[in-house]
Each structure stands twice: as C-alpha cells, then as structure tokens.
Image: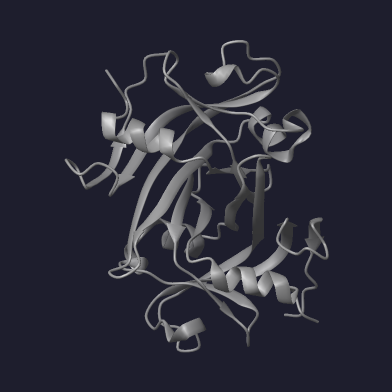
Length: 137
Length: 137
C-alpha cells in the first residue's frame, strides 16, 4: 500500500527543503533544514548533507531519537493558509547507504514514516489530519 | 545584551513561517509550521495560532518539553546555499498572554532562547555556529 497519495508525492518532489527534528538524550531538541529525497523503493525519506556523520542530528538518531520531518509552504497570505506534510517515525543513521534516494552516497539519515500529518497538500483530501502508516518491516 | 544581531532580527521579521519541534513524554517528536513574532520587550519568540490550547504542541510544552524553532530559506540553488536561524530553549504554554508579540491574544507558546544557530543570515557573521544566550531570568 502506498503511504503517500500522488498529490503528496508531487508536493514532496517540488519542495527542496525540509526540517528534521531530533532529540538528544536529556531532552535537548534540535530542528535542522535539510535536503531530502523520497526513496520510492524503500518508502523512506533519505537525508544526506555535508558533514552528516559528524552532525549532532546524526548522533541523535544513532542514539535512538525518534524524528519528525516537515515540508511546508505558505499557499496564501490572505487568508493565511499553510500547507504541510509532516512525517514522524523512527530513523536510522547509516554510515554508507548505497541504496539511498538519488544515490546520495555516504552517510544518510533514513526515516521510516509511522505517522503522517497532511494538511492542504492534496485537494482531494485537504485536511487529512493524522494517519498511521502500516508497519511492514 | 541583545540576543540577535540586527541582521538576524531583520531576517526574523521577513520570514513568515517557522517550524516548532516539541517532544511528547515517551519520545514522540513533532514538527509543526507556525506563525510567530519576536517579542522585543521580553526577548522571546511568541507563537499563536488557531486551536493552540488544544494542540499537541501546546500540551507537550505544558508538560515540560524543550523546543527547537527554525526559520530558513534557500538563498541559492546552485551552489546549494541554505540560510537558517535555529532557536533552542525552554518554552511556556500560556493560556492567556496579554503581553505577546503583536498582541496575538489568547493562548501562545513562548520560547526563551537558550542556544541559537545562525547560518548564512548575517553577512558580517556568515557561519556563526552555535552560541549560548545568557540567562537573565
């Protein structure tokens, strides 16, 4: 079963920047702008970037942090209308992922979506709210 | 002492959308696009929004979650250059804040910046990295 609708996939492809929230042990939260790709084969969000392996977000994920990733934009200023696709889930800190989306190579963070909040992205389903992704692993 | 440079304040005023990361007890992370204002008097980031008091982010903050808030944009696609201002800290869930930035009224989340990551926002200080805000409370 697809975890995103076609409209949501189009939105993901159009947006260039997402934000990844991770948590350190002890509760310190961080929120980092990141480039990303959707891995159609694995149905994951793959995130690369310079100095990934040395980054605190990579270490947070390696230490077991759950994550929340969001892409959004302002569809209209007046009335104030925001669209967003928020993806929550588990993540892996992979030192060398040969199967990454877009063949990023090198270290990546791989998100396995568990819950998705889709808002304003899919005209057929404008306020889809929170939905749970079946776990097939 | 000012916690943001003038350039950073200008950037904060120009950006309309930020993303607020909070954590539930148990470790579930969420990351929500939000409108915001900088409260010059209190030196806080104030976040309002419809149904704020009923939102999970508000409940997360009320339960003691630390937060991370980020504004960012793509300055250049080629070379890939992202600007961002990330603000980490403690937060309060206020049911009725009469002193909120922009007089939002009603319930708000108020962030007390503790650590700031400024990247590409201030030409005088293009890669300022992580800095700690003095605690005057």
